[in-house]
Length: 256
Length: 271
Image (cartoon, rainbow over the protein chains, first blue to last red):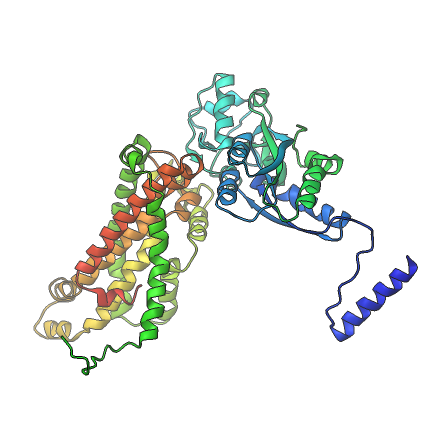
């Protein structure tokens, strides 16, 4: 091991002064090698960036490239032939689209859940306290459109609470809802718990019991056409395993 | 017919034509690809659904209002820029044309900080009970913001091209500045005004980023056709493609009207 260290130092020194294209040998006997591209839902941006870095640190021969977008965009890209090795969806519906097209290798694994929370601008100018307050005539409420997962969840919780919501805007993405709240244009928005935590001091979160009526489940799967199937499978196991769960829990995600 | 020995001078080397053809293909191929994905059997029901019609009507209404605002403010702006000289004119000209090169989402953020609830002007408006965000007014403002430079630029170019000879003659014959403007200047640049307005209308119709950022998205109030397409893409790609085709057809009609206005030479300055 000491000799290997000396060799490494020598190689590094050489590449440093002579700029020779030297490939340093991997220090551990890790079998995993190759690079994978992970397509993950936009709400996973912070957690998956963190997890990919941890995964790369554990496996020096592995590179993880990340592509974040809305789950339905990602499914479209994959079915149109985008080179992806792992897909992490923000809902089961989009994962089903992928499995229906038989593009998966193995069954999807549920690795996290997320629920809605009310986000209000700092100081809560409209004085929102309960879910029913959102229906107030003077309250400028922004939600997702019912066609997208966060909007479907909003409809479900409103139905469970017996409240009729009249949003001033129905956005296509949860980030747009959050933006309307952080800018102070809206009095309240229905976003995910993780969005409220991610936004820090820019918004205040208000939990409500009916949120349990619409729990969003996040599945992840390795893809059939992966060039590095063992690495892809290892990453899926890593996300669903202890290390992944720790990072996800810290960001506000629930256990599957 | 030219004989085999008579070589007609085309003015353009063949390799240039070849590259030009490639360029044209690059523009046309994606449109053709989109047409191949249209679900023709469902086309009519898809584009006549309540949400689609509501989005189309809102788009046409707001784009017309935005074009009217462009004419009201753009014509004086073009006149001032083309016919007067003052310190900082060049800088002002570049700034006025800025929305042309700004990403629309940046325009949306800028409008938000101006007319939004906590914005520069919006704060005072809010005190008077006037709220612009999430209203159709916000859509029109966003569209006007991005479309105005098109009108100003094409009209200013035309004003510079026609020169001031006729205006000078009119003035020596005793016509006041307003009469000169009404009887000489405006008729001279009318084709450019028409084509500039059509271009502004087209730009307003296609506006997406600033509207999404500043106005929100609610059926019948702020969800214009591009926003409806963006939303439908999530659930019903067939609807999104059908509506996209509708927007392409409208755009083609608009562009051909602009060319019919007979002032393509002014447009060259813009496009």
